[in-house]
Image 1 (cartoon, one colour):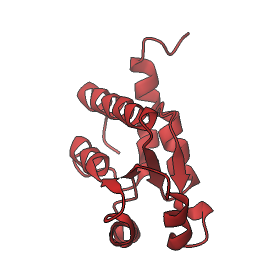
Image 2: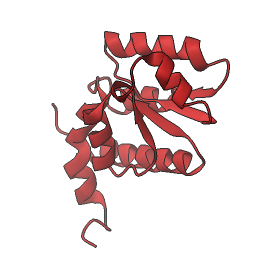
Image 3: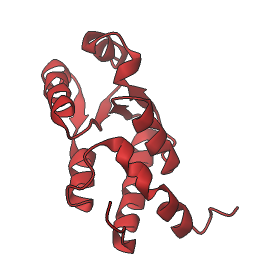
Length: 136
């Protein structure tokens, strides 16, 4: 991966702060698996994450999101992630608020270099070094 510039690090930090805010208001972030979950945690996300791979089928995922008012989809940008995004949108968009803003924003910030959520782990060190509270 190319060198990560300070502006990109700042934008990713702000994105994580926004995700934390959304989560504090009841939103759930939906990712594909454990490595995606770990990457978000490493970047400082402390809210509720649901992993698709921990459920038996999309129907069970939709069922478990029944009492969630807002779902933030952070599925990968590969063909499988796009397919799952489209399927989930068809299954829940008419009943729930589904947010794709953050997925699009990651693509904009990284200029398309990040294709999967787990790749955000590359920002972990840079974000920790730019955080004045990291040493506390």
